[in-house]
Image 1 (cartoon, rainbow, N blue to C red):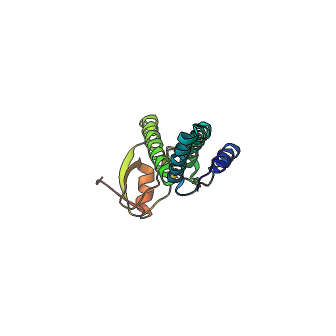
Image 2 (cartoon, helix red, strand yellow):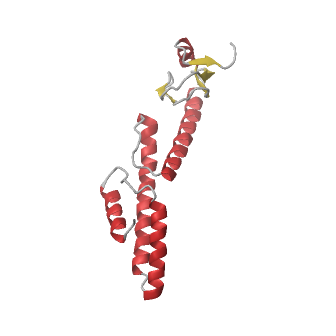
Image 3 (cartoon, helix red, strand yellow):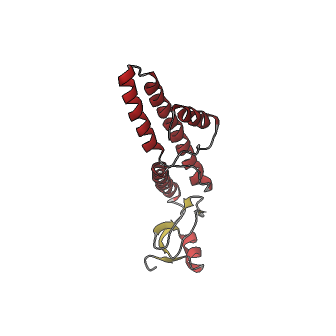
Length: 170
């Protein structure tokens, strides 16, 4: 159950730590219940201070967590380090950001290396983690059945090792 003291502690933990704080799995639902209760009390007593302060604390917590998730996304794309303590909705944001950044990097890397490197489309036969291509671009992770365009030299190695098949014939 969320209390004002719980919010204060979570806000302090978020501020003091580089990592995401552990939140109750139903944090948003519990916070909504807490706010509903405080709204009833504030109407009865005519005192909205705790309600306003609690709402400000939540906003502060959410903003800190969003900044951390954006930073973790960049770190994950570069190193593969998976952040901990994300709520389901935060994980959806994280996954979406990872996908967008990887798409951006692939397009950028292809534009930068299009004169030097030829690419081939392959279909992956099993899961493959992120790898650095011959063009220094990051590729993956891939699941079985995923289709991607990778540098031709990398495509050949993947096919030789049985990790992928060429999508089109040579």
